[in-house]
Image (cartoon, rainbow, N blue to C red; front, side, top):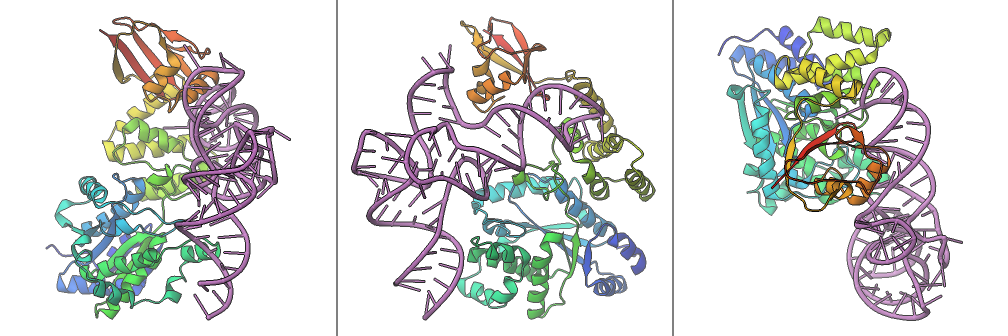
Length: 410
RNA sequence: GGGGAGGUUCCCGAGUGGCCAAAGGGGGCAGACUGUAAAUCUGUUGCGAUACGCUUCGGAGGUUCGAAUCCUCCCCUCCCCA
């Protein structure tokens, strides 16, 4: 292994964009020891495989892990296939339904593939916590649960809120932090990363490691990325997430849809501008001299470039302008082939059948509100039809951004 | 185990026999405007081809011409006491 950078240089990089390091001097000590013994630190981060796709919020974490890798450390990427079944209560206001093992495994596999878009596959160890959690006996679980008290558990802010608000909290949820902490024991983690909402869970890990006679992990929390609504934490279940596998145009548009005042945070957490460019942008945003859409475009293009390759952002921007600024149509529209129909095809029914609207009632509403166009002509009559003769082709537009070509064939 | 309060549409929350497909807010969707899928404003928001019908207010029965509303049983949640 090549020699590592000195402690102060490593720290300067690692501290960037970080909310808290607990305790900080302990990390410095660990780094010094790592350099001295030429042993990389074991950096843990766990992800519950509760949804199939990684999104930009995960990437904030992954980037920090990547930094650790680049500094010569070992990343332990833990897939919480066991804990996903419990459901992390962090920040939640309600008990989460338990996932089945099959769902979790499917998600885990999909994670594994996506993670390598950001992390270096050579310096990563992928682990599943079912490996040690599943074989635990009821005695082991009792043992584990005896290591933490109820009082300390309900100190936790989200439990506190739910308790005071008369909301149910199931016992199973108390177990979550314990299992997460137990993972750290099993993995002998030196450092564990997580979002600021993970602070409690991460600290439980320290406690359990101490009891197990290990040197407790250093806890590093990163700010949470707000979703496209600009308020809630990005999460798939809230529908405010941007998946890292989404197509460029979708990604660009979604970034453009974040509220203006969330821009600075997004630049900080998801753009890959160098420090000088970043500082400049933040200054500009604060000065409010420039039209915010200029910055937002830059952000959106930058994000697209990161996940789809340089230049893709610019292309997505052109397409975006064409559709939203000029009200035009995209270059490429998906085409669906339908069987020839004898009778004229009722548009309301067609929209529902093609899933362009969830129901006929909704399709009717869309037409009444002027949200549907066929071949560029706005449809205003709910009983309107089109002819489904052989070879005829129509371009449907629903709302501002949903396009579909249909073609009738014998 | 005893006592009390509750479970309403995607979410929060009003509604105590017909005027209830159910107020209001949030969210979503659409339109207008614009600087963007920001912000703002307007409309809309169970299903079915309009009138009309159908399904919905924790679940199952019942009373009634008529039930989210009344009765019975059951399930679930919260609070207090043990």
